[in-house]
Image (cartoon, rainbow, N blue to C red; front, side):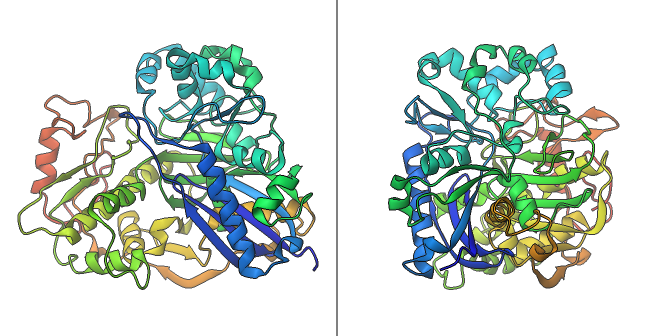
Length: 533
């Protein structure tokens, strides 16, 4: 059997996927598994690192088994992607020091409160292109140094999620420029910045940072032990890979500078590739997979993770014969007539705003049912994406008539329509079910010479052939629920007096939004932007 396939593995916040592709990025087989998130204390969101690895190798084995018993011999290389930020620490023998911390964790909020308004905040943005958030490596390491110093004493390497999988697959320690730039690299020069580490008070931990290799470099080969678990052949090259945001952009072909791409997964990720860094506290500027380009992304832990939480609490739809998104779509479609009556703040795991905000349903009445709540949840998620998109469009040259959409929400026709309506732009969904695994696989194909580079025309992603245009008559919201914005250059909303307790929205604003009757009426405006929806 010839080496004609590449394997992409993507370890997201909750689901790990393994997909086999041919050299042009056409999916041949796929499998996946779920890793439960655990909250042993308020604000903590963690995963068992051994479970992360077990889910990954089982997904790889199941994927290969779909093709046949000798499928591992056809795999030319493996590419990796994974959720960004968070922290996966290991000792000198490669064993977990503690549970892995994911980017939705907010235990380090107290650290951020100390840093805001100090030179730490402003200088960090100048050097790295971003300010830390609660789930970023800088904030988490500062928290661990104060509260779990023993864990850092035991640690030999501080890894990101995909780099933990590489260590288990190959025994090699490495990371790539996209994940390395989460906290500690120089935005313009590249490489780790001693000044940044010292700025955070973490200079002594520089020795724990992994070496940085190119995204399409071979960073190791599959060990005998990993081969026995996965079905891969020992010695198969494993490529460094990328943060799943960047890998997803590759997977859907969203690599043209200025093109707007949205990933509606656990996180709300709204991104534009740029050829020069443009810094703003509303987004992060990180190195892209290609040198000389940057990924500008405005993000928050406030997208489809809200739906996962809702289904965990209320139960999944009973009839899922055509998939969960289709089943939910039927529930929502039955409640789309007329203006929205229920508001949802999609901040169950956090928000993009500096002041604490929580997930909240507002406007509930006795006649509302599950479908109304799901509709409100989906709209709240969409409009949080809209806040991020408006931020990007305020300073970046966004080109193209349509927006590319991927992630869990892209599997729902109802949700895709809501995105088109809220953004007032056509939405294009590619025929790529697992965009980040495809991007990782393209990096692998490039590394071993099956493609010339990640933008090789042979790997152009397929399109569904249908673009979802905005339908103004279907707009179903009167404003972004509880989202503050820059009104005339000043921050409004969350910090105002009279804030509703726990809601993250001022009582006056909440009442004002409840009184507005219909997304789709020209008088209804998007808070903080002033443009009619």
